[in-house]
Length: 483
Ligand code: AMP
Ligand code: MG
Image 1 (cartoon, rainbow, N blue to C red):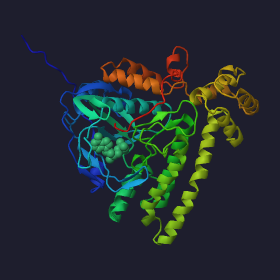
Image 2 (cartoon, helix red, strand yellow):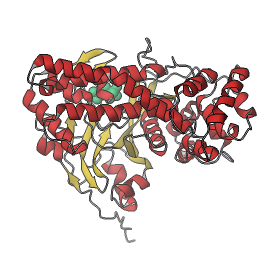
Image 3 (cartoon, rainbow, N blue to C red):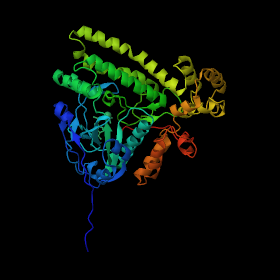
Image 4 (cartoon, rainbow, N blue to C red):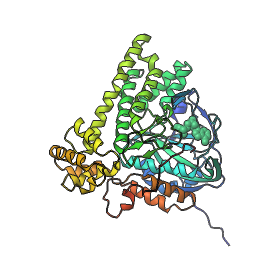
């Protein structure tokens, strides 16, 4: 009997290694663990195509390459060093404790990092096991793909591979997994803090110039102020988008803020349902530091930490450097307010930002489902207000607001409202059910939810199960950091 030949299509990933080349001292070469029984759970074929990789050939290799079972040819795995303020307290050394950057891929849209997460302990692991569980890695995959479909800058997810290992978390024994993540870069505020904390100005300068060349090529090398302004602009825009969606990141530590302006590190994140400014999901965020309404303040706090790290390059005169930084920091809150009002103008289909109409709507929908309230504006624009009014505790307040809003609406309001306000977000109860089923070996609910969140602005018809809030009895929703 002839042995059947297994044919694995030939392919290579055309890696480049600019961190290795340009940033000595910012990383350590580290090898991923070898997964005992890797099994591909999900592969992002569209993203593979965007990266110039043949999806079919990648599928044949993904389980081995993206689990650490075997390195893709040309990979040069490293763990990046970084520091960070976590819940306000500073750690001078964090770094990739369980992640391996395989290399970068050059595409028409720029340079992207390809990183494994959950691929084993590194020299930065401290007490951690270096592992990740199927549930949290699929959660990152799902939510990051939802964010991309919603038009929010974000890292992407290329694949999740179950490793065949069992890992231990506070909730018990869990199946292990590795996420293959694609990011514009993995440079964080904490990366700058790492070298600032050590007084290593040469490496700090190299990191600054690398960041400028990679993300802000219009700036001249050494332009620290330009870099700070450019990062601020992107972060302000990013957090304004989060706020427009009711997204609670949950762990806005300085090591989880990327200079690229992408949303990064989907841990205890979740989307708010009933609108309440103090919404918190993460079990460890007991003070509400990263509550929904605090996110713009934390953005400013984190940018202040970046400004501190850049101080040596802002001006040769230390006092002048501090004055420059303070002036910039004072401008963040008004810049955020303008950005948020622009987001709200889009979501309310207003011809121009309008603080009174924006604030008035938020007041009127307190306690109502955030996503549905905005989505039902499309009907309300054409006089069908019952669906919207049914959501709120005080219909009279909203009725008065609707009259003012309808008078201010621009042309094509219905169409613009439906394009600006999603019908489908990753609803917490659906995410939990999908992850639970996946952990038990059934990927069908995950696949269905993923398809729904990939078309967030599409019609509701036939998708009612994905558009409605959690049934009563679900919640309060709590997320865990033990990812
Ligand atoms: P995070 O809360 O995921 O942003 O992680 C904060 C820091 O802890 C980073 O330095 C991570 O690399 C590290 N870390 C998180 N989980 C683990 C783990 N299971 N093993 C090793 N390091 C970890
Ligand atoms: Mg992190």
